Length: 418
Image (cartoon, rainbow, N blue to C red; front, side, top):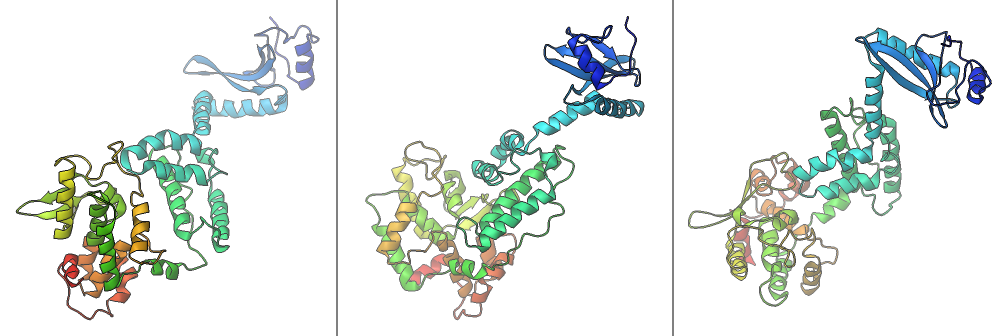
């Protein structure tokens, strides 16, 4: 049996060629032990591979861990790594377990976590899960293939700096609201990874608040517009004039106009959400945007104009009692997020409304007129599905001073003036 010898790079090179008799590394499983450090060996582990390994015992069981291949690492480096493993064993650790954990850690890249663990989580929680997953997948190219544990505050700061630069230069697709959505999407993912013990610390913890040098409040405020009485008359006429026969467009638009609901909540309406009987006439639904924070249904009064349109629509559908109110006519599944895009373009043109007017403006119109009619802010907030009045105070408070008529019990009463 060959005795151990102090391993050197020159000795190993000769042993590989069979020129260091009696030491050789020409055949698979040939081994040379290092005389300087107990447990360190060099082994012919394959036809073209010679590896350094460290042998040790845990609870009486003999184990070994590969340190690296020669000449990718040399003898000095291998000896240093082996000493680290020896210390780990001496203090009660197991180098193999540590290596396995490190391997798993390396495999948990942002992309892999996004496409597996986080994808399953989001699809069970969020209605528009694919949108949020794509938001992370498509907007973080420099870190998408980086291990989650190696994503640092520096990575995030660099990303934010680039986003702000594009935003300040007015580049399309870099509005502050869009950047904040992307930022929040990644932050939510990393928070999920912390809760599941995939990473120890969230890199967002020490990030400063995301703010922008160019104030967009004026631009955003212009979108929170309201329609004049004449414009609303024209709008309702055009809704009646659109298309032939009974289609989903009219009841959907009337719900948006008379209740201020978001389009996503209207698209997701089910017949079970509607209460139309002798005792109640309302919509009771957990709102989609806030469903993770607010589990209880929000009750929204259903004006007669909406009730009548829904009754007519229900008849055309065969008087269903369950399922989507507005299913896709081809698949029976949920409609796309923009089911009224063409309809809205036609109505704006027919009613001579501003071309830049967004469908979401109907929600702003609803809130604005209630405020101008001196409806209590708390009531308006509740009707819009908000837990507090903060958003109403911030975006519609300026309209309170301009109100010059008594409060309206419901927005539907205002329609009597049209």
